[in-house]
Picture 1 (cartoon, rainbow, N blue to C red):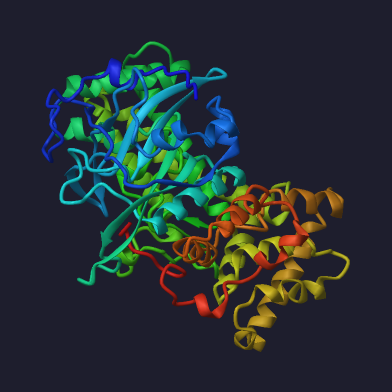
Picture 2 (picture 1 turned 90 degrees about the horizontal axis):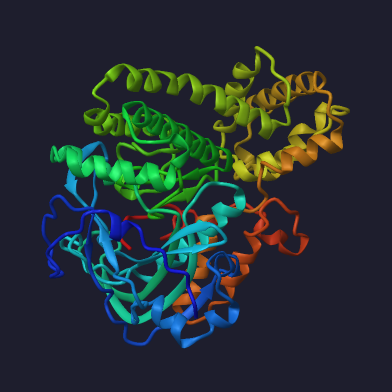
Length: 520
C-alpha cells in the first residue's frame, strides 16, 4: 500500500511541546502529537471504492493487512506523526472553552491527482482533548457517520467523506440515554477524509485566549492552502476570507434544506471552515415536513438546532467567526456589512432553491407567498417531505384535480386529511397549475429537472438503524445495500422501490429511528 504523503498541518503550524497523552489545556499550539490506541481484533466491515481511488489506492490495497492496520491505528505510516487538533467552540450558544479532537486522530495528509486529503480516524483512542471520555466510538454511531457522509456526497451536498468502517474488536462502555444505565457496545472506527478538518472553533480558541500570534499563523496557513485564490494575507484578504466562508456556509445550509437534512448539533466547533458537512452526531432526515423538528434529544426542549432554524444558526455562528477574525482586520464595517447581507442572500437563495424543487425556472413576484403557503399546508398533517417533492414531478397542468391523488402516499395518516385540508390542497394545486402555465419548459424536461434536485432515496433514520441492528449481529449486507442505494439517490432504481416509503409505524418511537442522543 503506497500513499503519497504530503504533511503540511503538523509541519507548518505550532505543535504542543508536551508529548505525554494526558488531558490538559493546550496553549499556543494548533495540535498535539498522539498515537492511536492499539485495537484487539479489528475487522474491516466496508470500504468506499471511490475514496480508495481518490487516495490512489486499489481494492487489492483495501484487502491487505497493511490497510487494516493503518486504518485502525495499529500501524503508524512511515514518515508520519499522528496528531489531534486543538479547538474551542460555542455549544448550544454558550462558550465551552477548549474542546479539540477528543476522539479523532489525524494520521497524515495525502496528495493524489493534484488534490490534498487529510486522513483521520474517529474512535481511535484518547487524546489530550478527550476530557473525561475514552476517545472511542461505538458501532451504531460509526455506521451512521460512514453511510451518511457518503450519502450526502452523492446528493451533491458538500461534506467530509468516509474511506472505511472497521470493527475494532473491543467493547466500549456507553450510557446511550444519559440515564445511568451504561452498557457495553461493539467498538468501531471510521476513517474520515477531507481536504481539511478545520472548523470555526479552530480559530475561536486563539481569539478567546487573546493569542493573536497563533490565530494569525492559522488563518495565514488556511488561506495559503485552502483559499489561495485570495492572494497574499492582508487585512483586505482576511475580510475576503470571511466573505468566502460565509458564502460557502450559506450554500451548504441551503443544500441541507433542499434535501431535508438536519445536522442536529450546529455548534461552532461542528462547522467546517471549508463549508463542508462535518461531525455526524445526532443528525436526522425530515420524515414529515416540520420546521420545528430536531433529531437531537439534548435539544428537545429549546430546539435551537431545529430544521427551520438552521439558516439563522448559520448566521449566529458566522457572527462568532467575525468576532474571532476582528483582531486581524481591526475594522467592523466590512464584517458587519457581510453579516447584514446574509439574511437577504439566504432568503434569495432559499427561494431559488424552492423554485427548483417545484419545477419553476422563471421568477414571479408572488413566488415567496406561494412557497410560504406550501410550507404551511405541508405541516397541517404529517406529510413526508421526500415523497411529496418526488411525487410532485408527476403532476401535469392538464388535470389539476389529480394533484391530491398524486401526493396521497406522502400522508402518514390519511384519516387526518380533513375536508378543510383537502380544500386547501386543491386550492394550492390550482395556484400551482396557473404558475406552471407561465413556465416554458415541456412536462418531460420539467420532470427531469425536478427529479435532479428532489431525491428519491435518503438515509432515513430507521434505515440506518436496521443496518446497525444487523451489524450488531455480525451481518453487514444491509450496510452494503444502503451504501450502493444511496450512491444514486436521484435515480428511479425500481429494484429498490421498497426504500421509497414513509417511515414505518414501528419506527416512530423506536430508539435510533426518531430522535438520538450525542452518545456515541
